[in-house]
Length: 573
Image (cartoon, rainbow, N blue to C red; front, side, top):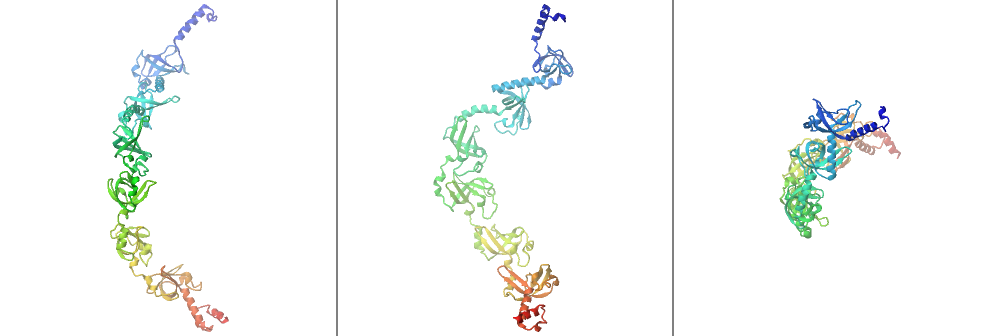
């Protein structure tokens, strides 16, 4: 080592020159891609010879096969590898062929992205939100969003799988090493040139025949013209009448004539109009009169009604509530079909809002008016029970497709109405009396008990304070249930009305079945109300006794405990 201590020595300078010459030929640096020559091949590994390294790097043979380098696994062939570490903790060289390929591929992608050049790839598989595309040159994997597969929706892309085709690089994330590509942009670029040539054909004022409705949006309707161009008809250009959405007027697949109203060669767009093909009907709207019958053509059927044309361009709304007199949930789909001509009455004309409303039912005779002429209030008519709820029956009257309302309180005079309602079912025929008819409100009210003798008539010759005999039917804590002799109705004598003395006002004094006298305390024929009272009878008898007997001794045999005191008060006066 002493020979190299003095660098000015000629031998030292010669050795330094030799070392510098050898090292300058080989540049070894971690993180760079270098070429390695295959020196030895075993079942699992490939040994490489790289000048400048103290040992032979080893690459797994499966790694080379996975990146498509299986054809290069021969002694003497060279393969690119990434030098990750010149020496690890075990003193071995660490290299990677797959990482080298990925870095090389990424460099090519970056170059294509910066130059805005298309790349060749193939769709290898589907994933969430799109597909995976493999770069043919490098094998790098890229993401193809579903929206970028084509310029129109595709239900099946099996014909595109594993087919070499061009893609445009639309996004690169250099930090994460992710790439996003588009097939749609490649297709659109070809179509853009063709579209410019197609648009050159059209001029403002041209008439396009038989354009097909392709789709809707909130601002208009798209039409396909000869399978070469899509044009837009704005919402305001659909009709002279007010339109909230294109689906109120058009159906997908329909064909209509269009008028070209603008051509934008920069944006490659053509704007069209439907309404301008016909004169503005609101200029002569005075020709139409309210409450007069006109023919209207059904052009569109919706869930809430139908749109009809009084004349070309004058579209009106026929709401479902104006379809029928009798059907509560009338459906235009069940009643009409597109192209039908129906009679309608104009119910509203609004020039400012450019709106015309029509009614189909007003063009027909009101069945409720027919019923009223045939069966005025007070007449008897037969009906069939067609529906029932918790408090009423609905009867179909004389096959007129109208229903009459029969409340449970109008079923019987005798029993509880809700209990009586349980006796009836659908299909029962009843002879009822017409109580009320409202043709404008489409209501008919009928009654069953009004066809029977009214047991309340028993009180017609009775008056307040009159004494009647009743039979006790039953008792409870609230009082007595009684029935006057000769009457079929039951009444209650409240507990407070059983006796003057609170000690005697006990319903438990009676067992039921007894015949007793009581007085009528109230009669209201309008409300069909009668109040009975035993207490009132006692007070009346007591008053009569006081007037009839003036002496204290004369009242000893009367059944009133306080009579002597009352007589004393009277003598004091």
